[in-house]
Each structure stands twice: as structure tokens, then as C-alpha cells.
Image (tube, rainbow, N blue to C red; front, side, top):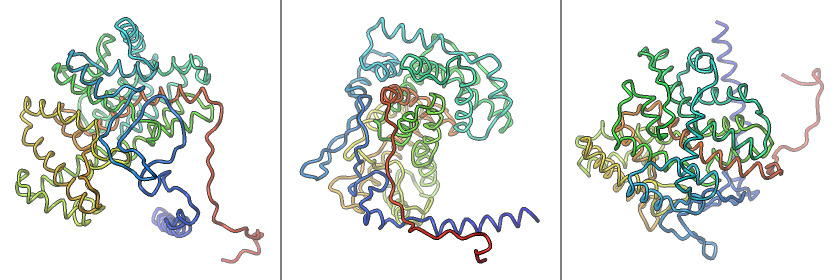
Length: 452
């Protein structure tokens, strides 16, 4: 009975909060506040300077947004060129990307060999950490468990609070090496204690690439093909960094500017990435594709797909929000380079694994949905696919469960977060923007003078 009363009270208070705290969007225009730190045309407000990553999808001329083909630069190097080189020379690329993001240059053979050796030496967890931090406290959400596990590393660090460049770099190398283990072991704990499956804990191999290590740790038999590992390596490479303005990286900058420790800053980034408007978007995209496939007569019939997509846009299907997930982007206008690169290799893997029907279905959603959004938004171009549209299919082909979609994103983005933190700790000025305050001054009333 008390619980029911409490629920009613909370509902009453929640209603009061909703009424009092809702900020009408018209007020942002009235006070010239850039809502979401964006201009009316969707472009971002300049709030910082970085050398780490750069996302380009348009240029500004005479105050107008001019669409252009998208590109993603890691320390000035196009990710397209990097991926092309990795593929042509049949080598894993994520470690090279991480090195480049951290240190600013492309590694030589000697430099990357030393870097991989250093990561390998850090591929272990503190004594009793696995049992006490992960296995004894399982959780339903791997991202939440990764936050807790990352924060717990603070207690095992001999110098956790120092923000000198050398100390933050040491911590960054440790996190790059340990995060695949933290992700995989929290997933295995969830499978066992929550889902009732067998508990499988594989020891890490210090000589594996990050992609190979992940497949080794999450699969019961530790078996994988070279093509599977290379595809996962591509996913890690494409998710490693995306400029300073994305929500989790900006959060890393904001929190790091306070002078806090590395583990607190990275835990903040993990919390941001978990959100469905950020890293959780691939889950929404996969759920939408499943919904479309189960509600059309034929996944190859363009008319059926178009009819259902129109219903989604009219808020009459799927989650009734009027959004086609996986299409469009805040920066990319004509193309998302990550989606284009992923699509090319996803097609090859789909042909190998018998997923061509599913791949062609996603292609239809991309082409039809992009055209429908062009009609609705009045743009001169169809909205392109972003990386989330094809990510779910790639993970499905790799046998990776949805529990790991966002955690894998986090594992990849650890390189970018750490690089941005290393950049931010060079600056001693705390990030402290301003807010417009709407309340007028009120007269304080003592308790006896307040009415019910």
C-alpha cells in the first residue's frame, strides 16, 4: 500500500516538474540561445579547438550551408585512405589508428611494433578484479557495468589523480588494452548470471589484434576467420574517433577541464555513449529494420517497403516518432564516409555468409528512405545512410549479440576519448558556459506563511 501511495506522490511531483521545468523552444529564439549548441540549419556552434579528428560534410559560403561529400580525418589523414591501405596490404588497422590519434603521426613499422607490445603487456586485470568487480556484481546492461568497472580501476592505480601528460598517457594505454577485457567479461557475466547460460572466461592473448582479441573473448570456442576479424577491425577503425563535438567526446572535454581523474572522465563518456540519441542509435536502427521486415509481405518489394516507411514517417508505425533511423547525420550531407566504407566490405561478407537478401533489403531501405526524407525535408539531395544503418547487419553476420553493439562502439571510441583527454589536460581553463535564467526574484516566505 505504501508503494502505491509513493507511486501516486511521485506521479504528482513529476507532473509538477513537467509543468514548471519545460522550456518552450520559442524561448531559445527569443534569447538567441543556440538550442543543443546548434544553429538553425543544424550546424554546430564552435566551442573548442582540436587537432585530433575532423568531420566534414558541408562548407559555409556567405552564411549558407553548401552540401559536399563527407570525409573523416584522423589527425589530418583521411579514414578512406587509411582503410584502403589496410585492406590492400591485408593488415589490421585499429592499433595504427589508435597510435595516430594519440601521438599525431602515422607509425613506422618499429613504432607500431613497440606500441602493440606495450598494449599486450597491459592486457591483464588487477588481482581479484575479475571476481570482485565483475563476476560478483553482474548487471543487465553491459554499458552500465563497463562504467562501474572502469571507475573501479581508480582504486588499483598507483597514481590515479595526477593529470600530467605522462600519467594520463599511461592510463590511456592501460584503458585501451583493458577495455576489451572489461567489455567481454561483463558480457559473459551477464550471459551466465542473468540469462542462465554457461560461464565462459577466456584468458587474453597479448599477441592478438584488438579485433581478434574481442572475438576470442566473446565466443565460446574462441574460433573466428580472418575475414571476420578484419571486418570487426574495420568497425573499430570507423568508430575510433569523430571529432570533438560529438556528445561523448565533448563530455570528455568538459569533465576533463575540471581537472578530474582519467577514470571519472572516461566513465562520463561511457554514460553519454549509452544514450539512445548517441551510441544507442545502432540498436534503434536494428529494431526498426526488424520491424519493417516483419510487417512487409516481401523484403524485396520496393512498393511494400515504401508504403511502410511512409507510415513510419507519419508516426503510424514502429515507435511512432516519425524517424527513419540510420539515415541522415548532423554533419554529413551527401554521404557518410564510414557508411560507404562499411557498405563495401559488408557486401563482400554478406555474399560469403549467405546474407545477400538481408544486405539488399537494407540497401532498399537506404535508397527509398533517403528519397522520402528528401521529399519531406525539401533538400536537393536524398539523405544518406549513416554508419548505424549497416552496423547491425555487420554485427549479425559476425554473430555478435545486441548486448554488445554499444559496448563495442565504446571499446573502439576509447582511442578517441583518450586522445581528446590528453589534448584537454594541456589546457588549464575550465569549460563554463552561461545559461539564461527565466525566474524573476521572489520574496522568501517562512514556513508559517506558506499556504497549502
